[in-house]
Amino acid sequence: MKKRGVVNLVFVFVVVVLVAIVFFSVTGEVTLKQDVINCKDSDMDNKFPDGKNYDTRGLVTYEKNSEILSYQDRCKNETVAIEFYCNGDKVESEEGVCEFGCNTVKARCKSSLNE
Image 1: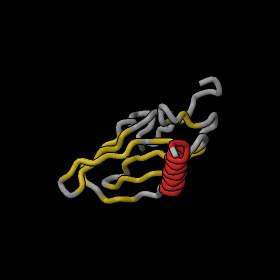
Image 2 (image 1 turned 30 degrees about the horizontal axis):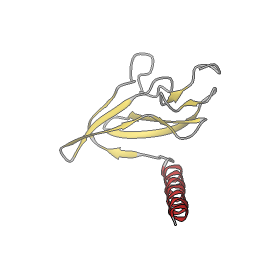
Image 3 (image 1 turned 180 degrees about the horizontal axis):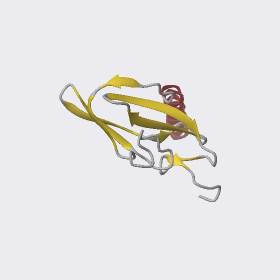
Image 4 (image 1 turned 120 degrees about the horizontal axis):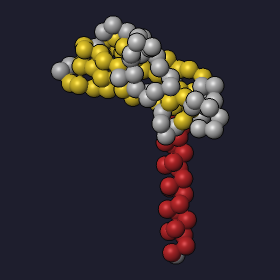
C-alpha cells in the first residue's frame, strides 16, 4: 500500500512539472506592446539608448491603472533571450538569439562559451 502511494505521488509530481513546462514554453513567446505611464528601463544607457541590451538583465517598470508593475528580461530557452524595453509610453519586447547561449541564472546572453 505504501509503495502505491509513493508511485501515485511521483506520478502527480511528474504531471505537474510537465504541465508547468508546457505552460511556460507556450507563454514564453512574448510579443508585447502595452500602453503605460512612466516607463523606465534599467538597462537603458548611452550605449543602448533604446534599452535593447541583451548583455545585461534589465527591469522595465511602469505605471498602469495606478499600480507600479514590471517586466524583467529573461531567457526563453537556452539560446533565446526576451528583452523588454520602453518605446515612448509603451512597454515592448523582442526575442533575440544569443551567440553563446542564454544564461538562465543571470537572464541575459552569455558573453562567451566559457561563461
